[in-house]
Length: 124
Image (cartoon, rainbow, N blue to C red; front, side, top):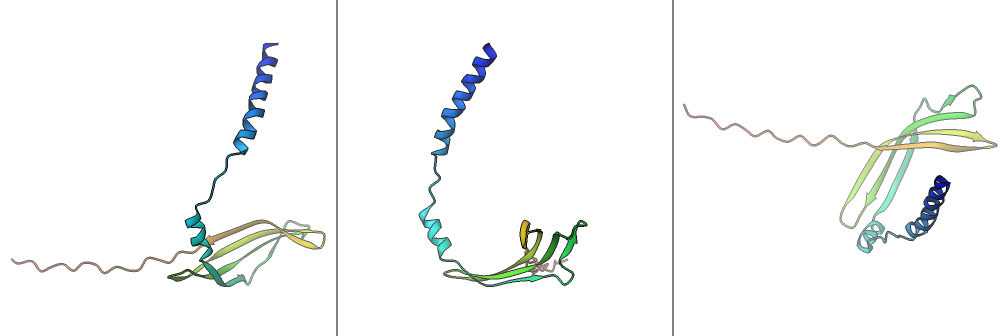
């Protein structure tokens, strides 16, 4: 009997706590929001690898594809190109392919070589 009462009280506490938790909001920073709107993406390019897509399983209703992506981002004071690779798993549902998994990564450039400090001649 005590266990039932304990479970009832826990259930009651959770039912009162959840609506309170759901009412909490995270108000976006207006300054950050305006900076994001100032960025424009262009030259969006997605290519599929030559040997892609690959079928998965024996039913031929699933496939896996890979490729590259690139785009140019323009802000108020600068422009930069971003590149990377993607992979996707899709399944045939009726007459349409639905993406089940999409993975993107960002390819970073190697850091620029820095000149090594020259050693000053020592006097002997």
